[in-house]
Length: 75
Image (cartoon, rainbow, N blue to C red):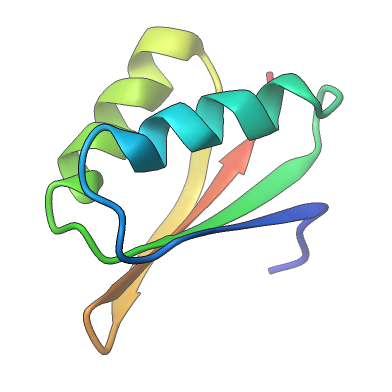
């Protein structure tokens, strides 16, 4: 999937991946895609909740080698 901006949140624990995602999305325009990579297993639940609370769309999420990748679309 193509993305506009990339955020490496690997090695960070809750709530830092979400806080950094919120900050990154604030600098983006509507419709742009942010790719976030995280290693915190709780981030799966956190990103789903973040999407519902903020209206930013969680377009896709995947896991490979204990790295969770999220694609967030700016509302």
